[in-house]
Length: 337
Image (cartoon, rainbow, N blue to C red; front, side, top):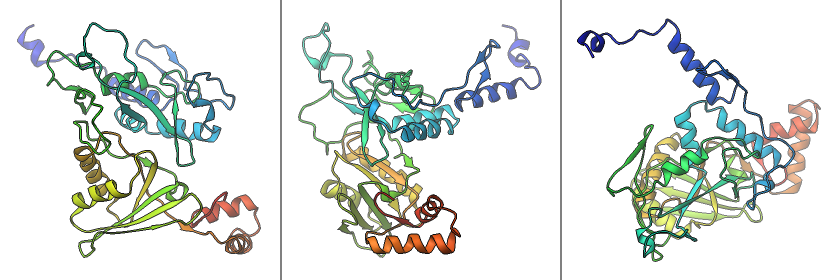
């Protein structure tokens, strides 16, 4: 290669870079586009109301509204790297329960030391497992197979080798150990806790956090509704020690929790908790979400009827019960609203 070729790279046609970026935007938004071979690629189809999947998992149990929400929530990100980070929040990591026959004497010699399964929120504060296929017709979201390949890479010849994909670093997992408990730390990537668009009150387990330097560590548990647990947590500046104590004492690894932070520190606290948990607990030991929304719980039936009547007559001007409830949901919450 001549010096002129090195110093004078090939010029692109004017506007070609814009076309490339536009193609990516359309592709990762799930819209129709022309690929580099000038072929027409159809838009991604939203999940059907009809149930097609016949797998052994719980794809069939996902409500149709939740399928649409997941589909739209994924494609509105419109950025491949951020979409992968979004999907990482759906993947759970565990030890290999049933190994294939291999040329090794003990399990520790296997090149695959962990397995993954995929879960999605069902809209009721719980997670259900679904088929790990890119062509799963129930959600129609890509990249799941690819994510598993780099989230749980096969152990390379050099055990210290790190695989880098986009801007996410993945460290090969350590050999599984039956003695490892849920409160045991392992080396894993630090990934921020995902946000949910649902109001915190919809979750069966809620953590409301407020942090001030003048506070002492303190927590109060209440039950605003049957089968709903709400924990009010006050943190001082000693966040790391207090978060560790709180999770050990109060958070059940088998349940899904939604966290709401009072004040404007939610993103900072998200990053801090995401860094603290992998240092002291097994990766994905807890199923956590952050929410930006918290409204007032109304458990009294008479008060609920009073609010509906008042909003119907004065706020929505008799425009229908559905519009009245939509208006109320911005301020209040109760079961079967």
